[in-house]
Amino acid sequence: MTGHDAPLRLGVLGCADIARRRTVPAVAEVDGVKLAAVASRDAARAAATAAEFGCAAIVGYDTMLASPSIDAVYIPLPATAHAAWIEQALTAGKHVLAEKPLTTERETSVRLMALARERGLVLLENMTFLHHAQHTTVPGLLADGKIGQPRDLTSVFTVPPLPEGHSQSTPGVGGGALLEQGVYPIRAAVRYLGEDLRVLGAALHVRGGDGMVVSGRVLGTTPQGVTADLRFGVRHSYRSSCAIAGSTGRLVLEHAFTPPASHRPVVRIERQDHREEVTLRADHQFANLITFFAAAVRGIERGEPDPLLQRLAEGSLRQAELIAEIEEGARRITV
Ligand SMILES: NC(=O)c1ccc[n+]([C@@H]2O[C@H](COP(=O)([O-])OP(=O)(O)OC[C@H]3O[C@@H](n4cnc5c(N)ncnc54)[C@H](OP(=O)(O)O)[C@@H]3O)[C@@H](O)[C@H]2O)c1
Image (cartoon, rainbow, N blue to C red):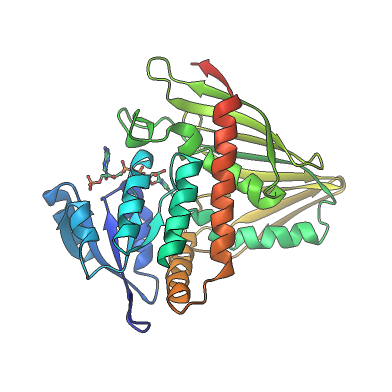
């Protein structure tokens, strides 16, 4: 339990790249949250990271979870380690912000969401793009009829090959490209087309030898026939886009998932006789998410849970269900 006026004391489990590059610097920008400590399996790494960000260094994740000076933890561990550490953190009474994918199995995510609810704790997946203002503006443009009735969505998240031995593509450690990169277009499709999206078919490109997924393409549809074409992987140049084609026009967001805080997104709207670019304000999706997480903790502690927390949890579970459908039905092609 935290005092409502005292800052939320956040601990970080693991000196991950994403923590050091984006999440931890964003914490400094958020009122009401204090980076209290970073924990690492390695004493020197904990000390160096703590010195960089001006907080305490802790050796061992379990030592952090046992600390009464930590109210909440951020878990940026490799995907296969999320479930066990989320469970231990919730059991230790800590609120949890966990990196995507929340876990590698839907049933486990359902169980951990239930555990968080039972214990009156927040469990939130760090899907930061959902907290960028551009994704609040676009539904408004669609509702204004800028492209007519939506007919299909195309979304892409691809990054160049990861360095040899990177945790995200190490068997038994990372999740592979469906869980690491695929979650973005899949979640965008759920966000824009709704939770009743279904998978029609999928191709997963797998690495010879260890079978890790390196890229893929998914075709989905809503019950009304609005289709989704989703592409992801670690075999192409960087792309991070979301486009919706409608009965009278097309709307394109080129930097849909990981825009830096200084980036002013441009929404392009194309109709037969018209082309328009709407430049939006820059926004800091990592800071926004941490602000939301802290407010959600305060809400739960007051006995007034934010309804958005429940909707985000449902979105995370729907995303996990779609991933399970893709894993089950996909054609695997060795590349
Ligand atoms: N939200 C986003 O925009 C975003 C972006 C990129 C990645 N991610 C997610 O963040 C998570 C971490 O990704 P990352 O690329 O930042 O990973 P990373 O740099 O490899 O860091 C993972 C950290 O986990 C700890 N760890 C514990 N067991 C490990 C093991 N067996 N192998 C390697 N590291 C281990 C290490 O910390 P210590 O050695 O200090 O203990 C390591 O620094 C993944 O779930 C990924 O999908 C999210």
